[in-house]
Length: 516
Image (cartoon, rainbow, N blue to C red; front, side, top):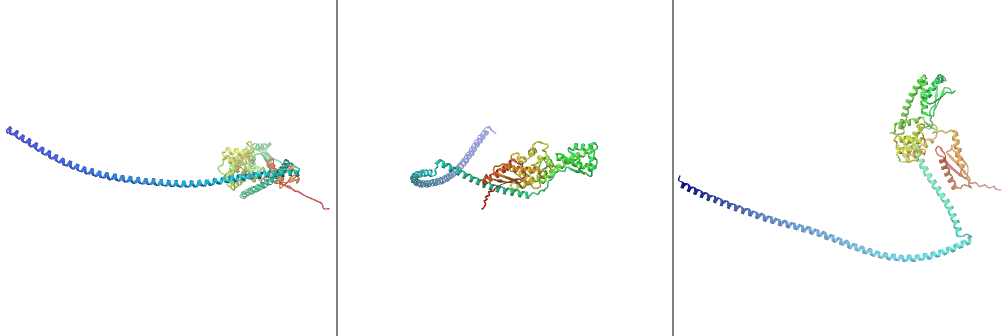
């Protein structure tokens, strides 16, 4: 093709393309303008809607705030009104109180004036009374022949004597009432406790006499040149007394446990018939082992009967040994059981812990099982023994204080003292030698005879009562009560005796005249 034509076609194509592009651009610009107008319209509409909504919300908020402010103002106004009313009422009360105070002040002033007038009148009367008393005193001194100081001394002496008599009568009345109340209460508690405790009214002692089948057995017990009896005494620690008593020998030893071992060993040797040193040592060894088992068994039985648990095995062993110990003929095993029962019953009546009282009662004489091995009284030894095996302080103190060797720290110690006295003083519990009994009665009478005003004293009812006859010119009725109390305190301090001693003072006045 011709180049010019090609150029022309190119120019035409270029122009057509340019116009087409311009046309398309114009259409796009027009569409964009329309779209932007539409968007601007929607934006204006939305803005108007938001403006109206904001205006409405603002109006609501303003109305709510106004309502809240109005409510708050109303509350404040009501509070102010209430305070104003209270202030008004307070002003009214203060006004009334002020009026009352004014009236009281006026009344007090009037009373003060009245009191001043009465005081002046009283002073005048007092002066008149003083003048009259002076005149009366002068008249009394003139007619009685005594000065005022002398009359005062006589009056004071009479008043002092009268006060002493009245005080003595009042003291005697109070003491009698206290003794009646205390005695009634104590008798009730003890009788209630004793009625619930059964005990045998017999005395027990360790057997120290061994019966023989025949007198020929004495020679076999002695042995050739006395070797059997020496071997037996060396193995057991007892003395074998062989005398003219038919078919019997006596075992003597201060230790009842060793004496019991010897008795059992001797009975086994006699029953077996083989008596020689080797056999004696074997039998004594077995009897000692059996005795150890027996004491433990007896100790456990005692704890079971006394309803006491948790004791240390060593304490139980010592309790079992009490079965072979006596005091004035009373078996200490049974005595400990009685004291445990009575202590528990008394504690129950007093609303205390009965288990603690029973425990202290069953252990109170445990020192008697060791008093030959340890220095000191059985009460102190028993207290140390109980303390060593971790018994409670209340129990240890009750054991040590049952003979008043240490100060009681609780009612349990006093309960054990009372139970010990009841068990030891009951009929048939203990025996006392005739010489010691007579000596105690003589000493009791001599103690009463040593007081001033006593003409004669008599110990009656086996020493349970002391009757004292006094000279009526030396001792009056009040002095008789004081004498009975002083004699009772002296007996408690200076004498040892079982149970109680009643002191009775008799003052008798006799008047006699002969008709002629």
